[in-house]
Length: 278
Image (cartoon, rainbow, N blue to C red):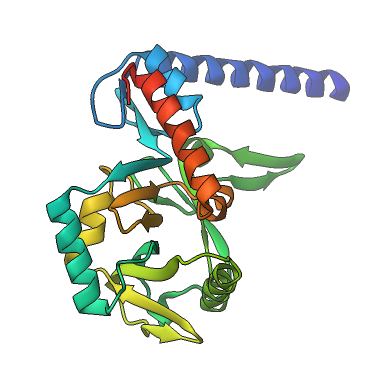
């Protein structure tokens, strides 16, 4: 009798789960989906899929109760500063920080340099939804008499996760960056910039940070909501900006051969995906 009861209960659980998934599918099916490109223009689902499958773009999903926004963003891009903006930027960098703009500048950028007291005690992973709100418990669970029940509702809302370092790891990663850069045999110069400083020293253990006065670099190179983390500016004003970090690109591109190869690949993909000639 007990075996039959357990079988019946298990069958009931399967039915309930099936109905839940079916209902979820209906809810999602009723929501409209809008696809936009890197310039905020409306595109078809097919164009969106083609760009998502390339190496120069990535996608972001923003979900609402009745609407889903699928947005294309650059992973990285190349460009050329116009004469006046280039002159203004180079003069500011030289006047404020004594930077020699006759050399290729490699800039690693963070928006906010936190005070030491604001770093967590331990390294951790923080999850966010599509609107940038923190999800503290992506997977919830509780025990019942015959096992554990998992609640995955929060997990479905996770759009991205960020590895948050404690202060010791933060400094260690910057020191490692400086050491790796010194081993490169080229004339490039490395700088670490921030937009805001919430009370952190500008120099710690041979690592130095520079302020982006007026957020000029941010204004010039941020693409919509897409924050950049690495920037390379040549004396000619030609630049490379990276939005989604790739260590392979980061060091290989500093070689003349790497720059040309990655740029040619970018232009080939970009022109093919956007039906234009470069």
